[in-house]
Length: 111
Image 1 (cartoon, rainbow, N blue to C red):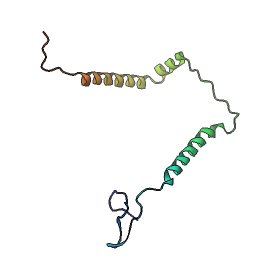
Image 2 (cartoon, rainbow, N blue to C red):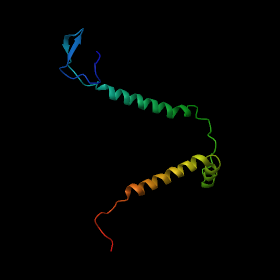
Image 3 (tube, rainbow, N blue to C red):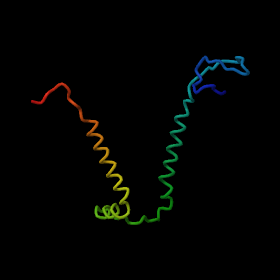
Image 4 (cartoon, helix red, strand yellow):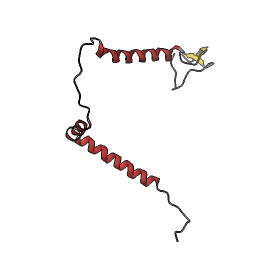
């Protein structure tokens, strides 16, 4: 069955073949098991991705220095340009909030 427009087949719609009615739609909803199936597939994919690196259990991950000093060195050595672009975007957002948030009070005089 193929819909002519972007619509959902509703109960009672005619089914046409070569321009003549050959039946009516008796159900217009999607499969009730579709959501459960998609959720099961999603959980399975996430489970596989989480467990695929831990299959052997013997591989050691390299030590990562997570100190603030190491983070600062990485930000200011390897990621200087993205760090500066982020700062400019945040500054533009702050200026936009101030400009658009400013309300003009009309009809009142400051004496």
